Image (cartoon, rainbow, N blue to C red):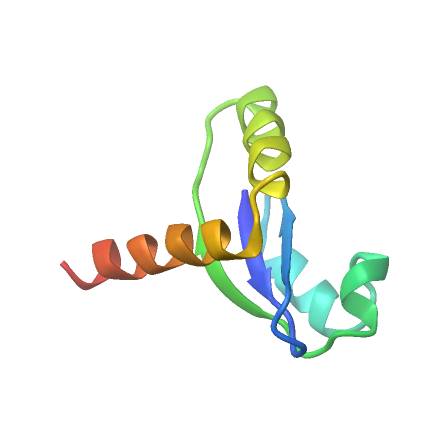
Length: 83
């Protein structure tokens, strides 16, 4: 499960079993249609899930959030990484 920040400041949410490979695909213009015209993208949030279904449900939940709510989630993640 991951969130990318696109060049235009928007966020893209997705899930994958291999985040590094997926990030390279996005930045090569071979990822999601949404990110192809918003390159480059930067990985700003991620979380691992043991089961696909949980990741999928979390993706749906996050996609429904407003931009400021996603930003808050990302900011909290950054703070946790610092500690």
